[in-house]
Image 1 (cartoon, rainbow, N blue to C red):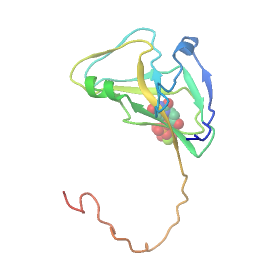
Image 2 (image 1 turned 90 degrees about the horizontal axis):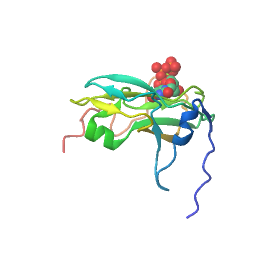
Image 3 (image 1 turned 30 degrees about the vertical axis):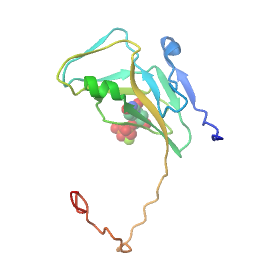
Length: 154
Ligand SMILES: O=c1ccn([C@H]2C[C@H](O)[C@@H](COP(=O)(O)OP(=O)(O)OP(=O)(O)O)O2)c(=O)[nH]1
Ligand SMILES: [Mg+2]
C-alpha cells in the first residue's frame, strides 16, 4: 500500500518546556496527535468547571483545503468526564496563534490535571469551502424538507 505524502505543517514552540511533549501519532494508524497541557502546577477542575489550557504550540496549517480539529480523548471523557468546553475545537488554516484547549469537567467529581498530561487530540481534516448561490426553488429531492426523525424511529 502506497500512502500519499503527509502534509508538512509549520509549528512554533512557544514554551521550551513543550519540546519534550510535542504532538505525535501514537501508532502508524492514529488519526490524531495528542496535545499535552502546558501548566505550571496541577489544575484541579471542580465538577462543571471549564478552563482554557495552553499547549505552548502554534501550528500554521496555511492551506484553506485543510483544518485542524481538537477533540477529546476517549478515556478522559468517558472515565473522568473531562471533555471540551466547546465540544470540538475548529482550527482555521490561517490561525497562527497558540493552540488552546477549553477543558470542561462535565463529571460529578473533581479531576486533577497534571502538567504536561495528554489532554486532547489534534486531527487534520480536509475542508471544502463552498460558494452560496441564492435560488427561489430547489430541484426536487426524495427527502424534501423532512428532518428531525421524519424517516421513522427504527
Ligand atoms: O479549541 C479551540 C478552538 C479555536 N481555537 C483557535 C483557532 C481558531 O482558528 C480560532 C477561532 O476559533 P473559532 O472560529 O471557533 O472561534 P470564534 O469564537 O468564532 O472566534 P473568531 O472570531 O476569532 O473566529 O481560535 C483554539 O485555539 N482552540
Ligand atoms: Mg470564528
